[in-house]
Image (cartoon, rainbow, N blue to C red; front, top):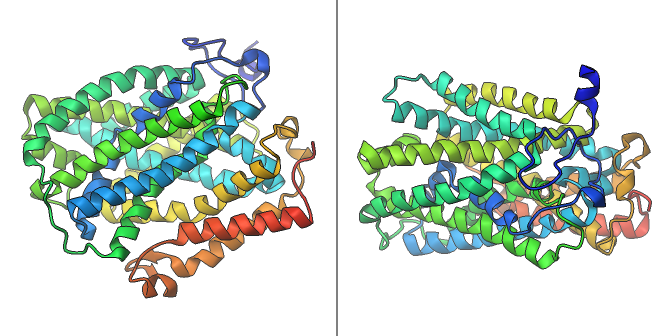
Length: 459
């Protein structure tokens, strides 16, 4: 009886159904499709209301941009990153698949590579965000709760949502969007007197502008790997234009808001070496408003990491690992606890910047392959029924070759100062455009290989 309960393919029956979702990466049947498209706004709006976005805006000023230049870099970066996420979200309702499972259409058995990389990435994102949530609990309790215990509370909450699954996350994000918008509005109003909208940068050059655009874009580009996970239950008839619009507005508006707040107030920070949670606490001067901010940070952390854990669980399944989806989500949560404790012992700021740049180097080529494949399929779901059975998948050599070449050829354009600066990035004054190069190369290579020797899942 217990075994049967742990293996049945349960799916939510509609909005508000919080029974555990046992369904894995198989396509969602037409009979199980439901939901309002506007919920894509709230599911993408909530997770960007986090200190990581605040730190990102502050980082633009640290790199050397003034407010106007930083503002433009934030806008451009969010348009690029949010735009790709919005486009990929439209595939979900058409095929009823999550984003990494969709990648099986182009990568075949080679899905093991992007699937496992993304699984590790979700754990890394968990660590970055949980770090903030645990600190928020420390601040609001005056240090009475130690970091590890605050972290455990964050992990338990996020893992609980991810284990229940799709509908629990959508429901939580819907109500959290309202609450967090109000809380962060209060924080924003409190911080406005400390803002410097006339800030002049010491490094307003093109190289730094491109670098910040890349870093900002990568913050949202990381969501590209999750895009269809949260639209796959929508009816296939849902207009793609609405799917893209609500996804883009949700992800971009929240990110721009918090990033600009970090950019505008960075000059008022007395100690730029501390984490953004303590920076926000210091800027607000403690007291009631600071407590409001810490509460918002805690719930924002749970919101973003529940999505990390859920998408991580689908990535592990897509890579061919046979495990019940809720257990897979729980594994991600446990590993993120360990990863966060490691991050706690490191220099957060340098680790954060390096990671944001690092993830773009493979997401750029990956997203190009998925988008080109979708175009070659003429936006058709043909072949989607085959992706559930790993043994029936083709090798996916064309996609893997394109991914590797896209990454390798982009290496000279990588700027990870002082660790590594490619010769092309050096010629560009340190500007990092590796993700653009990787995207273009992978798109061209995959298109050429598929036109000459198709290797995609057969219809």
